[in-house]
Amino acid sequence: MKQFIAFFLLMMFCSSCFLFSDLKKTNFSFSENGTKHSVNAVVPKKYSKTETSVDSAGNQVHYFLYPGGAELYFAFLKDTATELQAINYSENIPKQLYQTIFYKGMDSTNHYWRETRFSNYKAGYRNVEEDDDGTFDSAINYFSLHLMR
Image (cartoon, rainbow, N blue to C red; front, top):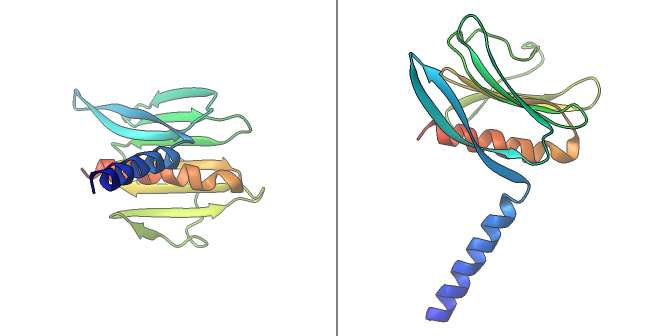
């Protein structure tokens, strides 16, 4: 019986490693009213560059840029009307997942995009190849779940 439990635990550990093999752990740090906050995140590996921007309204966005033009972003927005990517609302129906609202679609060049919104947070990606959209979706879902903790 002990061997069975040990084998089961080993299999669970190995499968969890496999699920995140294309992802790297990181965090999204931002300030709110002078207090620093941090949210756990995972991002697809092989990004070539990261950038952080803060605008005059206090909106904070952290970008992960990938070869080929794909982008992943996490944002804390003081102004939730701030647009991080153009979404045609007449063509894209909002969906609910994990108490968030999200939009997902394909652009004119057959690349995927997505944006998830929860309170003052947005997370999304754009210009992602079809084979990679599942990995980018995993990153957004992970971030969304950790926001609600």
